[in-house]
Image (cartoon, rainbow, N blue to C red):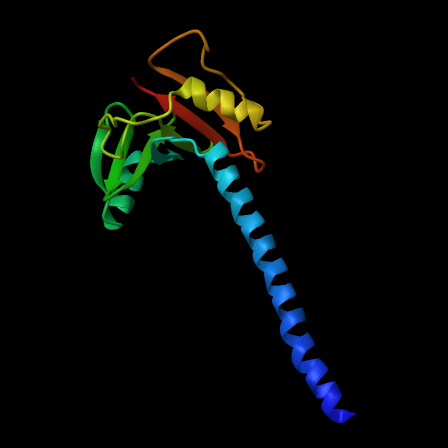
Length: 166
């Protein structure tokens, strides 16, 4: 009798395990397909990323970020703003121009402010953001072409600027 249980167990265990694994693989495959589909739907080419910081003292902030390895990339002390760069990282330092900090994306540009060939126009991005249910604080004119911008805030109130220069 004990041998019969062992034979039945020897047959059932691989069957149950195989069935479980097939179900797990099928579920994982469905999850991967859903993730892939979501990525394709939401994959927007936002361009170069930088953070724009509202600073109290431009000179002091400049010196601080230079100690972190950043160098002046654009702007000037006389204009009350500097764009600082360290490899692919960009930080804008702005004195007296706005309150709070802004996350900035530049569709059509790389981190060197050079035009990139393949990018999503801001109006296409705007349409996708609206389709995704996001509320915009300002919008690009959908009937225009070329330079435009839009703004929105994240759930924590951080301002996000998409600023297309071409």
